[in-house]
Image 1 (cartoon, rainbow, N blue to C red):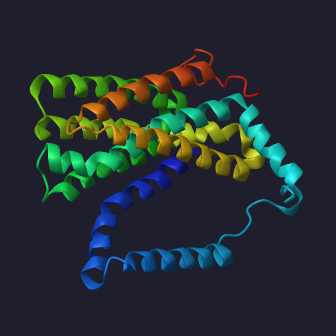
Image 2: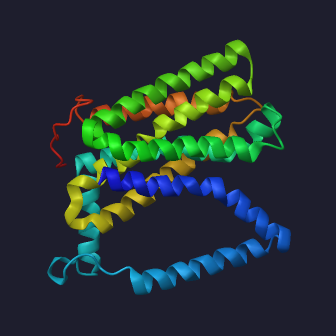
Length: 274
């Protein structure tokens, strides 16, 4: 599961590299309102594709009836399952770093580093580091396991965020220091996301669809809210963003440690019940 999630997230992270260029093409040939027409067309095309090409994967006897009682019971099981709930919460916290960066990246590169003309290249470079790490994770996870890899990456992420914060304070706001360390930071992030997703969904294969839906909603809501708060704290420097990264890293470590009952880096599956 972690290998497949890594490949899926690799594709997902390539999108930020190509999306600005595609948006610019639309704006070259049409007014900005045309962006919404493109979105509507893409949504309709996806609706048709999933209707005719994405078949039900579970045999009839194993499908969950579409009744309120069964649906509510499935969502309750997601909350009661220790591993699922813990890694769902941890994912929401750590993914806030991605939301915070997306919301402040243009301001940072344009206003702090004065890289107005080359912003897309810097943003694309960080996205490329993230995508490459997800692709690498698909290979490494079979050798080291989801827990060792993601827990180690989380410790590295937190430590490197602290190093970057100290470096920006000690040497000033320099893109020559910021970019390589920040790209490395997001490479470590790429070793966390797919593994956390797989760890959260692993105990609930019987209701994988419901678990995935709950996981996606919860993580996006939590990360969007926290990431938005960090983005609003922008003060013309990288300091609020980096402080946010350090706090998110430590908070995520605490959540994972509680979820695993203190057994970090261990591939022995803990109890997954409530």
